[in-house]
Length: 114
Length: 114
Image (cartoon, rainbow over all chains, first blue to last red):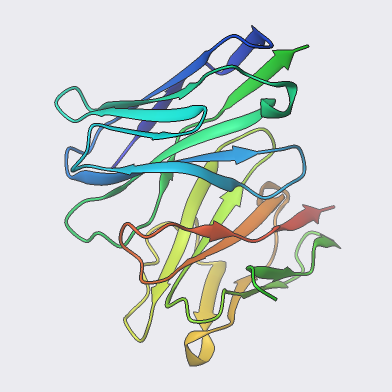
Protein backbone atom coordinates (compact mmCIF):
# COMPACT_ATOMS: atom_id res chain seq x y z
CA UNK A 1 0.00 0.00 0.00
CA UNK A 2 0.91 3.67 -0.08
CA UNK A 3 3.62 4.80 2.31
CA UNK A 4 4.72 8.34 3.12
CA UNK A 5 8.06 9.09 4.77
CA UNK A 6 8.67 12.49 6.37
CA UNK A 7 11.93 14.11 7.46
CA UNK A 8 13.16 15.49 9.74
CA UNK A 9 11.17 14.40 12.78
CA UNK A 10 12.23 17.54 14.66
CA UNK A 11 13.48 20.88 13.37
CA UNK A 12 14.66 23.87 15.35
CA UNK A 13 15.31 27.23 13.67
CA UNK A 14 15.89 30.80 14.71
CA UNK A 15 13.13 33.29 14.13
CA UNK A 16 13.46 34.73 10.64
CA UNK A 17 15.24 31.70 9.20
CA UNK A 18 13.70 29.32 6.68
CA UNK A 19 12.44 25.82 7.43
CA UNK A 20 12.18 22.93 4.97
CA UNK A 21 10.35 19.65 5.55
CA UNK A 22 10.58 16.82 3.05
CA UNK A 23 8.32 13.89 2.23
CA UNK A 24 8.56 10.95 -0.13
CA UNK A 25 5.69 8.75 -1.27
CA UNK A 26 5.59 5.26 -2.72
CA UNK A 27 2.48 5.17 -4.96
CA UNK A 28 3.23 6.81 -8.30
CA UNK A 29 -0.54 7.18 -8.86
CA UNK A 30 -0.86 9.63 -5.95
CA UNK A 31 -2.08 12.97 -7.22
CA UNK A 32 -2.94 15.18 -4.23
CA UNK A 33 -0.54 16.32 -1.50
CA UNK A 34 -1.79 18.45 1.40
CA UNK A 35 0.15 19.80 4.36
CA UNK A 36 -1.41 20.16 7.79
CA UNK A 37 -0.31 22.15 10.83
CA UNK A 38 -1.29 20.83 14.24
CA UNK A 39 -0.78 22.85 17.39
CA UNK A 40 -0.74 21.04 20.70
CA UNK A 41 -4.18 19.67 21.55
CA UNK A 42 -5.76 21.19 18.46
CA UNK A 43 -7.19 19.85 15.22
CA UNK A 44 -4.99 19.52 12.12
CA UNK A 45 -5.35 22.63 9.97
CA UNK A 46 -4.81 22.55 6.22
CA UNK A 47 -2.15 25.14 5.36
CA UNK A 48 -1.41 24.40 1.72
CA UNK A 49 -1.95 21.66 -0.84
CA UNK A 50 -0.71 20.81 -4.30
CA UNK A 51 -2.08 18.67 -7.09
CA UNK A 52 0.03 16.59 -9.40
CA UNK A 53 -0.52 18.84 -12.41
CA UNK A 54 1.67 21.62 -10.94
CA UNK A 55 5.22 21.65 -9.64
CA UNK A 56 5.06 24.49 -7.13
CA UNK A 57 2.53 26.52 -5.19
CA UNK A 58 3.05 29.53 -2.93
CA UNK A 59 0.91 31.23 -0.33
CA UNK A 60 2.66 34.16 1.35
CA UNK A 61 5.48 32.68 3.46
CA UNK A 62 4.60 29.08 2.64
CA UNK A 63 5.45 27.15 -0.50
CA UNK A 64 5.23 23.54 -1.57
CA UNK A 65 7.20 21.90 -4.36
CA UNK A 66 6.46 18.57 -6.01
CA UNK A 67 8.80 16.31 -7.98
CA UNK A 68 6.65 13.54 -9.46
CA UNK A 69 9.59 11.76 -11.07
CA UNK A 70 11.38 11.40 -7.76
CA UNK A 71 8.11 11.01 -5.83
CA UNK A 72 8.90 13.64 -3.27
CA UNK A 73 7.43 16.94 -2.14
CA UNK A 74 8.59 19.59 0.27
CA UNK A 75 7.20 22.36 2.46
CA UNK A 76 9.14 25.60 2.65
CA UNK A 77 8.44 28.23 5.29
CA UNK A 78 10.31 31.50 4.97
CA UNK A 79 10.82 34.22 7.60
CA UNK A 80 9.71 31.88 10.35
CA UNK A 81 7.90 33.28 13.38
CA UNK A 82 7.35 31.79 16.86
CA UNK A 83 3.71 31.15 15.99
CA UNK A 84 4.88 28.77 13.25
CA UNK A 85 5.94 26.38 16.03
CA UNK A 86 3.77 23.27 15.70
CA UNK A 87 3.75 19.74 14.29
CA UNK A 88 3.53 19.61 10.51
CA UNK A 89 2.17 16.60 8.63
CA UNK A 90 2.44 15.83 4.96
CA UNK A 91 0.00 13.48 3.27
CA UNK A 92 -0.67 11.87 -0.08
CA UNK A 93 -3.78 10.55 -1.73
CA UNK A 94 -4.98 9.39 -5.11
CA UNK A 95 -4.43 6.17 -6.95
CA UNK A 96 -6.88 4.21 -9.03
CA UNK A 97 -9.79 4.60 -6.60
CA UNK A 98 -9.05 8.26 -5.80
CA UNK A 99 -11.30 8.23 -2.75
CA UNK A 100 -9.26 10.98 -1.20
CA UNK A 101 -8.18 8.92 1.80
CA UNK A 102 -4.99 10.47 3.09
CA UNK A 103 -1.83 8.59 3.98
CA UNK A 104 0.12 10.74 6.42
CA UNK A 105 3.77 11.10 7.22
CA UNK A 106 4.88 10.75 10.83
CA UNK A 107 5.08 14.50 11.41
CA UNK A 108 7.78 17.11 11.98
CA UNK A 109 7.92 19.10 15.20
CA UNK A 110 9.04 22.61 14.27
CA UNK A 111 10.38 24.88 16.97
CA UNK A 112 11.02 28.51 16.11
CA UNK A 113 13.22 30.20 18.70
CA UNK A 114 12.65 33.92 19.29
CA UNK B 1 -21.89 25.40 13.14
CA UNK B 2 -19.65 25.87 10.15
CA UNK B 3 -17.04 23.23 10.97
CA UNK B 4 -16.83 19.51 11.60
CA UNK B 5 -18.27 18.70 15.01
CA UNK B 6 -17.29 15.66 17.08
CA UNK B 7 -18.61 14.34 20.36
CA UNK B 8 -17.73 13.57 23.02
CA UNK B 9 -14.51 15.55 23.20
CA UNK B 10 -13.16 13.15 25.80
CA UNK B 11 -14.16 9.61 26.70
CA UNK B 12 -12.74 7.48 29.49
CA UNK B 13 -13.95 3.91 29.74
CA UNK B 14 -12.94 0.57 31.12
CA UNK B 15 -11.36 -2.16 29.06
CA UNK B 16 -14.00 -4.40 27.52
CA UNK B 17 -16.71 -1.74 27.26
CA UNK B 18 -18.20 -0.56 23.96
CA UNK B 19 -17.91 3.10 22.89
CA UNK B 20 -19.61 5.24 20.27
CA UNK B 21 -18.03 8.32 18.77
CA UNK B 22 -20.02 10.81 16.74
CA UNK B 23 -19.12 13.07 13.82
CA UNK B 24 -21.25 15.77 12.25
CA UNK B 25 -19.63 16.90 8.99
CA UNK B 26 -19.75 20.29 7.34
CA UNK B 27 -23.18 20.81 5.82
CA UNK B 28 -23.27 19.74 2.18
CA UNK B 29 -20.08 17.69 2.34
CA UNK B 30 -20.64 14.28 0.81
CA UNK B 31 -17.31 12.71 1.79
CA UNK B 32 -16.54 11.76 5.40
CA UNK B 33 -13.36 10.20 6.80
CA UNK B 34 -12.31 8.76 10.15
CA UNK B 35 -8.67 8.77 11.23
CA UNK B 36 -6.90 7.72 14.41
CA UNK B 37 -3.95 9.53 15.98
CA UNK B 38 -2.03 7.70 18.67
CA UNK B 39 0.12 9.69 21.10
CA UNK B 40 2.94 11.42 19.27
CA UNK B 41 2.11 9.66 16.01
CA UNK B 42 0.78 10.55 12.61
CA UNK B 43 -2.78 10.07 11.50
CA UNK B 44 -3.94 6.62 10.43
CA UNK B 45 -6.84 6.23 7.98
CA UNK B 46 -9.74 4.11 9.26
CA UNK B 47 -12.81 4.41 7.01
CA UNK B 48 -14.30 6.57 4.25
CA UNK B 49 -17.91 7.31 3.29
CA UNK B 50 -19.02 8.92 0.04
CA UNK B 51 -22.71 9.58 -0.52
CA UNK B 52 -24.64 6.34 -0.90
CA UNK B 53 -21.65 4.30 -2.06
CA UNK B 54 -20.30 1.35 -0.11
CA UNK B 55 -17.76 2.64 2.45
CA UNK B 56 -14.03 2.00 2.15
CA UNK B 57 -13.32 0.06 5.36
CA UNK B 58 -9.75 -0.87 4.43
CA UNK B 59 -8.21 0.97 7.39
CA UNK B 60 -10.25 -0.55 10.21
CA UNK B 61 -7.73 -2.37 12.46
CA UNK B 62 -10.02 -5.20 13.60
CA UNK B 63 -13.60 -6.44 13.45
CA UNK B 64 -14.21 -4.72 16.79
CA UNK B 65 -14.36 -1.46 14.82
CA UNK B 66 -17.39 -0.46 12.76
CA UNK B 67 -18.91 2.73 11.48
CA UNK B 68 -22.07 3.90 9.85
CA UNK B 69 -23.32 7.05 8.26
CA UNK B 70 -27.05 7.60 8.35
CA UNK B 71 -28.82 9.83 5.88
CA UNK B 72 -25.55 10.85 4.27
CA UNK B 73 -24.70 13.17 7.16
CA UNK B 74 -23.85 12.19 10.73
CA UNK B 75 -21.47 9.27 11.26
CA UNK B 76 -20.90 7.04 14.27
CA UNK B 77 -17.72 5.06 14.89
CA UNK B 78 -18.26 2.12 17.27
CA UNK B 79 -15.53 0.22 19.05
CA UNK B 80 -16.64 -2.98 20.75
CA UNK B 81 -14.85 -4.68 23.63
CA UNK B 82 -12.31 -1.88 23.90
CA UNK B 83 -8.64 -2.67 24.51
CA UNK B 84 -5.93 -0.42 25.94
CA UNK B 85 -4.29 -0.14 22.52
CA UNK B 86 -7.48 1.57 21.29
CA UNK B 87 -6.52 4.64 23.34
CA UNK B 88 -5.98 7.47 20.87
CA UNK B 89 -7.54 10.60 19.44
CA UNK B 90 -10.17 9.74 16.85
CA UNK B 91 -10.47 12.45 14.21
CA UNK B 92 -13.21 12.95 11.68
CA UNK B 93 -12.83 14.96 8.48
CA UNK B 94 -15.15 15.91 5.66
CA UNK B 95 -14.71 17.24 2.16
CA UNK B 96 -17.12 18.50 -0.43
CA UNK B 97 -16.88 15.59 -2.87
CA UNK B 98 -13.91 13.41 -1.89
CA UNK B 99 -11.06 12.86 -4.32
CA UNK B 100 -8.58 15.67 -4.12
CA UNK B 101 -10.89 18.13 -2.38
CA UNK B 102 -9.48 19.56 0.87
CA UNK B 103 -10.39 17.70 4.04
CA UNK B 104 -11.39 19.69 7.11
CA UNK B 105 -10.95 18.08 10.50
CA UNK B 106 -12.96 18.18 13.69
CA UNK B 107 -11.37 18.59 17.12
CA UNK B 108 -11.42 14.85 17.69
CA UNK B 109 -12.46 12.56 20.52
CA UNK B 110 -9.72 11.66 22.98
CA UNK B 111 -10.42 8.06 24.00
CA UNK B 112 -8.74 6.61 27.07
CA UNK B 113 -9.13 2.95 27.97
CA UNK B 114 -8.36 2.13 31.59
